[in-house]
Length: 196
Image 1 (spheres, helix red, strand yellow):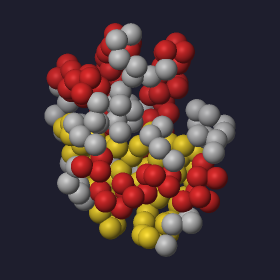
Image 2: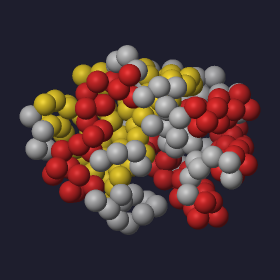
Image 3: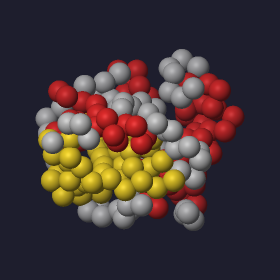
């Protein structure tokens, strides 16, 4: 994906902040820092191959160090989209506030609370990365996603088993796309979530 110079500069600045803070707060596994761009930035960017940014609100659940939520915000600076980062850890929220301030991100806010305590957000888009199994994520999606919304989950090698397990309690439509950054991983695009 071709990005503007401004977007590219913000992504570089974001990586620098993660590297600076990671020694004090475990934002990403230290072993992944040498490949931060390919392991984290590019992994997050690829969701844009499968969703068209449109007007509305994007909610990133369990944002942690801002992946993919901060990346979504950087990409959506000129889109009519608001981004909400839900993160219960006070220190990680402090990091996210620093990123927003230093990168001058205009479209993003932080909700420092547990996902289940946040009032329903009626999100047009929901994302999560390395947060929880699908069977745990779907109740969160049901609570926070608009009925016509789309959830985008970056999942590891056990994604098929997670889908099978989740179908015991939930009905949902899922389209899987192979990950560009990990041959065993997938991006799951989920709609139509309801109790089975």
